[in-house]
Image (tube, rainbow, N blue to C red; front, side, top):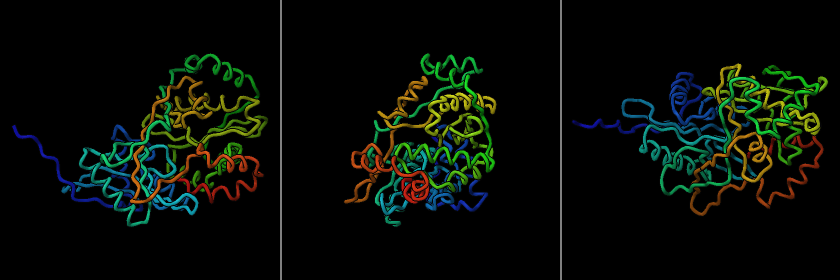
Length: 357
């Protein structure tokens, strides 16, 4: 019996994301791949390019017959503060390559390195997926992901939350708080006001408003906003993505007032209920840096941390980008940003944040 021979790769190129047929072809592969994330969809790359002005460089590998054998969504991040890099995927917590075999992965890795050199990018960062080769540096222990199944009903969901955190959710349910979901301009405005204040209080520049709008527009009914209000005033809000039966609360936060009313606790519980009604069966709490408050918060909800591994290659003599806010070099800057007037932070923050990628 003769073993089947895989078609050799003859095509490695940057996809044209303006071509609807090309995008549909790529997205079909993504939706069928077991390791795919919403960040592999062409919608994400288009949204980042539109919302942040950072160029999409979506690589595809094809066989001699023209069949797709692998994809690698890359964003060309350029920043005067943080340097230039090819990132998979830009502004995402996931990415990396999706392939049918090791040969396609190695070819995509070589192609990404060659593209980075051509574009003058010092490094290539892959946020997930397999290593393209042994020469790539593997990074572990910095981030962890958190996900678990969504329970079958509201009471079961409450019981799945550890006792102390469950008590906070029950307290929130007793307050005069309202829950709204949608993606209309009213929802977008409420989310941006809340999120911008939340990240300023954490000492982080806010992303451009256009990025959130572009993601909502590109993902259509696969993304929405859930907002918690007290007496008509939004105090907690989250923009979530829906992919493959999983909900991912991606950009969320609360104002200083949210803590008093336990609005963040209600927000995530309400999102679980909302996602179940949409047919989702899994809740992906996203990634957090080990040792941070967000990491502890998710553990308090009963989510177990799953270590994440990233891959990195830097050009000869080049240093990797330093964008980790836990880096001691950023402590003073974070403290100063936390004291910055919100209006000023919202004005200059997007120009900085668009270069973080």
